[in-house]
Length: 186
Image (tube, rainbow, N blue to C red; front, side, top):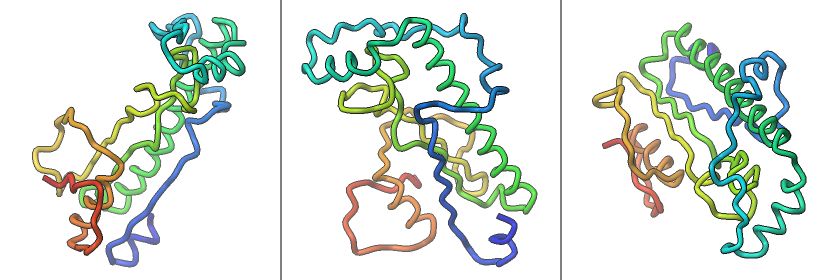
């Protein structure tokens, strides 16, 4: 980021973390933040999936159905620790923006390509089933000099398809290409 700032020109940077992804390997200090005895199972963790396609049950039974309840809680604990680890890494990026004087005039988007079932319906990762845990992900936008009424939460459907039109509008660019999404600038 310091090198990008030194150029004095507009820039874009994509930082793609692999996680939080199984096998949820993180430094011990992040695991130590979460006590396994405080990790609840999702309310639907024992879903028999009887009313779902058989492939859902096969996937669960072949992989995750073999885990004991304690192992499921341990996996959830590791997932949470991984999320916290990524938050800290993201914090380093934000510190670099602040140190170079770019934090207020840089659009920052923090999101994910998918969620993780983290024990929902007895599943982990994303896979074939179509449950909210894999498809409901946060999209956090930060741009102090560009977002009207900052500090608010908007509970609206946003798709990853909305990002490209948003970035084009923010950059003052247009395209003849038709996008499935719409700009989020408004």
